[in-house]
Length: 356
Ligand code: NAD
Image 1 (cartoon, helix red, strand yellow):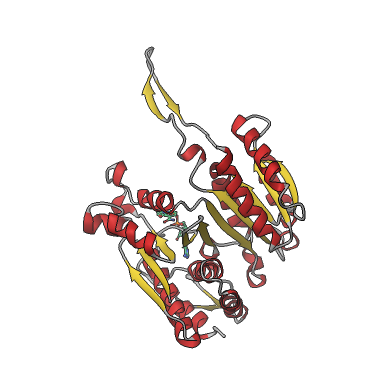
Image 2 (cartoon, rainbow, N blue to C red):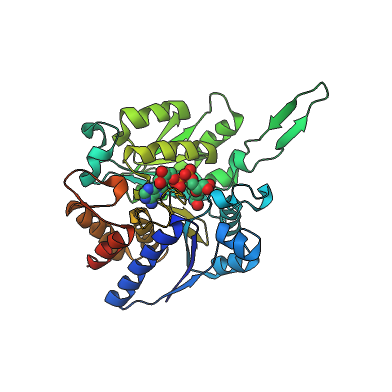
């Protein structure tokens, strides 16, 4: 039996999480597996019910589960709540508590969607790489931080980029392990020509590489990597980088494949894992059954693969998505002339029906 903690969250998070549940229930029935899914509010929904974006009960539920699934949080309704209880605080707290230090974002170009990419077909066709972003360290958490008044007037804003050897070692090791299952190439991205924290990052990644001599290692500066992602993204297999650089490069990479509604993610630690679509709560289309549920459905595939070791089922979900797209079904964000436009829930039905 696999225990899943399910946090649908807010806006389209709820709609796409419903499609994830539908898929999991279909898989359970077809393949005689037992998934115990327990739901709890998170983000704005939790603020409305409990006055806080995440509760100790929700954290316990997440810690006791075999895997955690999250829709999306936030929305205009909570934009003006006090900073300490903003919906996004729930994400940071969940990631920190579960110690999910590696955020994985596969960047995969589905052939049926090539025309949705802003880049030329020859640059993106067959595109398939993985970004590993360090998720619970670096400048988003380093101290000192804050804004203070200066004696002579004006203010000073400070953030600190900090990485320690063990923090870099564990993410580097994950990157080499993933590369071993793929095309055996790691690109480590830093700014070692300017930042001392990057110099340590590069030194430690190089050290860890000695355990993985069958994998090729390349170092790139972040500015160069940002250019290469547009010029020749097919050169990459696994990219590993810091929290800040990964935040930016993974969004840049996301756009290569066309729609944010297609992008799954996993955040993995030594004991826990959290799966979520990359997109937010999309308040502009929420409640209209218009969202693309494929990012959410592909996040379930990652859960089957990485948390439950059900490789064939994970592949079956990916194939079902590919089949539905090849058959011409499209949600509005990826719609094109001559295609069959469907709702979020219909897309969820179609994928579930095609699971073999
Ligand atoms: P967003 O990802 O919600 O939306 C950006 C654009 O993409 C919108 O036009 C939206 O309609 C579209 N879009 C997003 N998901 C889609 C889907 N599944 N199908 C079709 N179209 C989709 O980003 P935003 O507008 O910057 O943020 C909205 C809210 O979501 C904010 O409150 C933000 O803080 C929150 N947010 C949450 C997460 C998360 O929970 N992980 C991530 C990003 C943003």
